[in-house]
Image (cartoon, rainbow, N blue to C red; front, side, top):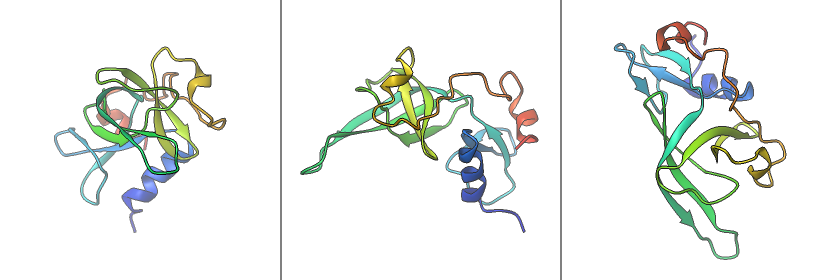
Length: 138
């Protein structure tokens, strides 16, 4: 039996990779779903498309942003280590197995109070390869 899309994404996240799907025309597909899709791994670079600050009574304000990844899909996440403005270039980092983003050029220490954040600013093993070639690696 084929693993669920959530299980595939979680397995990649455990390795510090953001996996996404490609449809039959090799267009990026997010969120992942069951179907005849191939898998690929994002390089982790993107641009903030939209952002807002959530303020809950008794809690610190939290960023919620939509990030357009360079591969062509959009993901909702957080930009840590400072405020995010629309158009800001960001790179993937991790809070445990949760993908978050850090503004490009920001020091790794700005990943906030998340000492376990793993940054994905180094080229991945899939960099420079076509999505179709990368999909076979997943």
